[in-house]
Length: 465
Image (cartoon, rainbow, N blue to C red; front, top):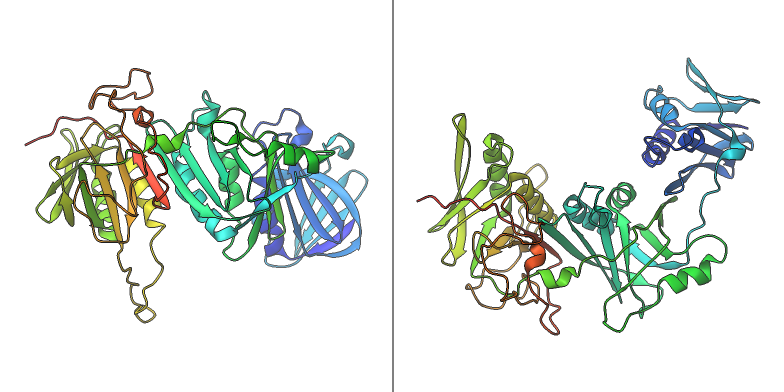
């Protein structure tokens, strides 16, 4: 094997594939990165759970295949000079020459490396930029606690020409709807994807580049098995959980992952249909104010929002050490003017909602000036300081509290059996927070919702005068 490849293209490809390598491989060969030189250069890895594959252009003098230590190759390519890199494979090693730098990598046994899984039958395509933005909004809400695997994933709910992404860690629930082009519009299914895998796949997705999604069984006969895994619906109208693998492919890159077994929560029923209080704030100044004030908040300390006539006072403190207060213009309707949140959870929701902001207005300023965002406001809706609050992007003027919201809350009724302010009896709302799952069942036929919704449990702290 002998080929020459550009340093920049090689570095990007190796770095992307290396992110899928296991940190503690069960057997050493699974830490290998496979180099296949033929029609260009293909780099890949697979540990029986996640696989990554990318093809780049290369000047191939002698086709061949070699398995080299993946993380070591990634470290080397990051430090190479800005010149073409030349690879030459010997019986037991691969030499890498780039300018005056020379490296020799001992190869791993190729015969022990598992074959990469074949993707299931394609389920449809989606714009890479849209999917990447949606993943960026939803992934932060997934749990990092491996003791509950279902909560570490992002649910991809396929329903006609819409994909709904949803993730929760019990204290917040992020949901985003995006359009896509399904191979079969009648398919109704849900795939529970590891959050890290979706985030890694989204890193290289670009606007205007179609990404093909495939899910279901993989391997021999995957076309039929994949279709079976996407079977339409059960009698309840809920999506059938997909099984096996999921694949994201676009722009010469493909990532596959084993789906998380189990059924995701019925997230649509978690959103109340009405809120007693509604506030709107300009996105950028409010996010910056919360970020600055949060600097003094201790672990588990809240950021307190106190709404007054035309303003919101953002406050946080570390007892006996520091206190921060900032005032931001705001519109507010309701009779519960004070609510407190975890700084981390609040900033995650605000930043994710701001991704829905329009890029530039029709009367955008000249280059070098700050772009204006018409309707650049975030909406916060809540009923009491002890019930989950909803954060969305608000493009329209704020309606009066209690009126139906055409762009905000999802259609659902609050469970009358859940007493406001009582702790979660199921153990989910640790730390004085109520589990969003305490909300009620969805209202019939309600589908007019904001593209992104973030339901977050407040911190229950006594309101100060």
